[in-house]
Image (cartoon, rainbow, N blue to C red; front, side, top):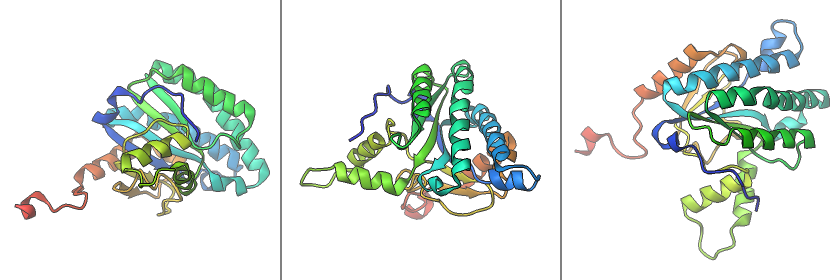
Length: 246
């Protein structure tokens, strides 16, 4: 079982929201402008920087974003190579910004299929930002929730099934990450309305928010609207509202 050597999660994580984002629409955004898909992905990095800076202002202390799924390996080889290069360069250029803004950066997912230069960049970025406490930014790369759960289940060898807490710890370990809090709000941009194999365990009781806004256009105001909608919802976790229960 893969073990994470990262230090403990940020002290603030239990006091704020965990928001997850499926950053969809980069390619369509670029195509609508007659530009190559790579331009859309680069614009998506700028959008992520914008949202990471705004997140703490909305009470978000953990932010997990879907950057590259396990199924994305099926894309054209040239696009995959461009994405890997963009990820590596983004890690190198964003580390100082993360340190200045007290942001801890973690990469969630498999690493054995990533190019060695990218793995080294990941390890360097995680080490440099390990003390960040204002925001825990988790970027899912080569990630599949179903594959992660299958690998976690294969790690359990005890006669009795694991508790939810034990399974969550194993699941985090196979994804090379400390345990994160459950997702409170899951946002998907780009107009599609599906989860696409993202954080299925952690999002068991997440509120879902779908927007037609393409990811490169998503900004702090859009994030604020999503969080405001979340705060208007009645989260009961299977129980009755207080008035009905009484």
